[in-house]
Image (cartoon, rainbow, N blue to C red):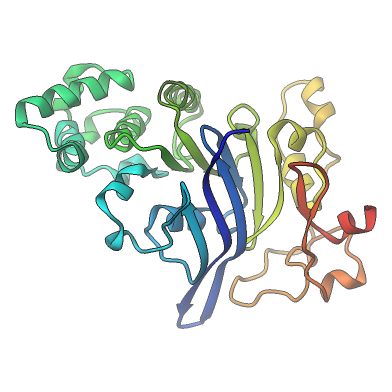
Length: 321
């Protein structure tokens, strides 16, 4: 089994607001193995992006630990060493806002290359050309501005910027959701190709489970800041257990009878997602769960092992053992 690249334990993040404390992430335990893609999935507000931002260093955890290659990295970005910053990079959701419109592609890529490789101006230009070729863009793109290229090409530039430091771990925060369907496939193929060529480890954040089927090694589901279920991708789609997981899978669009046969029965959740400022007692999903029992509103279930790599946080799993 590949060695552990990233590990979090009891990872928690709260935000103080004028309305109260937002409980964004609570007690998240994750293991990401070297060279794999862990898909972290959930609805908007589930806390999945907050987890990625803590790993990258944009947010400091309220509590809990984060280890990269057995090194404690649960510190703000400004306190991280240059070598650590080099190892972890992020690709944001919207390349239109993550790329500086006043800089050419050459200038955008020159920043991380200049900081981390410390090369001469002449060598820097050669590095930029090589980097563009690596992600499949022609040399003349270095003279263009972001607004002169398409959305998919902007995201590929953002991916090139992330690769400029030669990282070992890349957090992908909804990297295809802001793009047309016609270019999403190209971005996914580019990411998979680069992962194979450079032995990258991905933490892939998304709300789209259909993307995970062909991308993720393992899938982790989040709801209201907490993990619900973690399983290898194949097992996850064949034998989902948590009612929330089944709800998400039942909503995936299909185009064939074969795909429809693999989907769980349609689950229509009750009510609305509770506020992270005023979390319900017991299981965070019990207000919307079609299988809730009296104890669900009083006791928060612990993670239960269903198999060697399949865990779920649900009272139904404990009752089934």
